[in-house]
Image 1: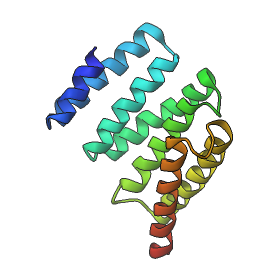
Image 2: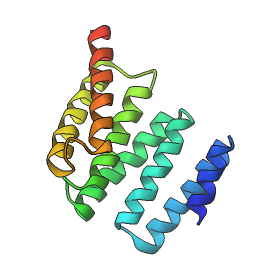
Image 3: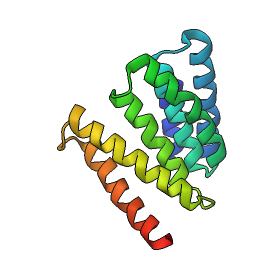
Image 4: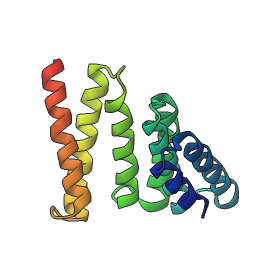
Length: 146
């Protein structure tokens, strides 16, 4: 329920409060459930809120911890793991301090998760299409900066 309230806060422009609430939800899930698919999902929601607040380093830290957890809990090819890896790529490329090495990592990551998403979800799946759109955008940014 707190995640839903946080979502409402985000919609009405109370992003900082939403992020704090999502942090608490994430901490609570870690304490109560440990490594669980729902813990991974709320971690991703929390990290997304941090990205929206332009707190990229914090978001990357949460996601670096969550990616291995998601791989252990759901497997490397599961949609939850792909979603979390995609969020990590977003934290890298939206950061104004992103280096060329960061952008190369984003392209490599998006290429990998797009390939897996096509195999697992199919090329018509909305998530697969969005990952592809982000990949093409990041490739263009990388070309422009190289």
